Image (cartoon, rainbow, N blue to C red):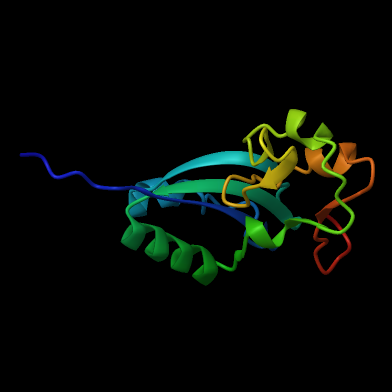
Length: 147
């Protein structure tokens, strides 16, 4: 009987310092740690600070080894849950954001007519922040004042 292995999946926000932005550190996750990755958003140029939202999946032990490798390489890692958040008091649950959410992190509960936010599905694309009429969806800015 074949053993069933559950894959670990996590979306992370990476910040690359200028000296690392031109190196192939992300592709080494697949080569050296047997991890799959999906680039959800990226803004990287050689010799400049860059950012990337990455979905990483594989065995949990490999994930943690791969994250350690990234950190040792100088990459700063932030869980996406710390990059996008909803101001619960400001949200009017109009549902506009649900139509603009590619990964489906925002959805409408048909019974309660309230917008649900699943941070584990969020890719930090920022589309929700652009369409929210009351600015209830917020992107946490990094220390340089950029998204």
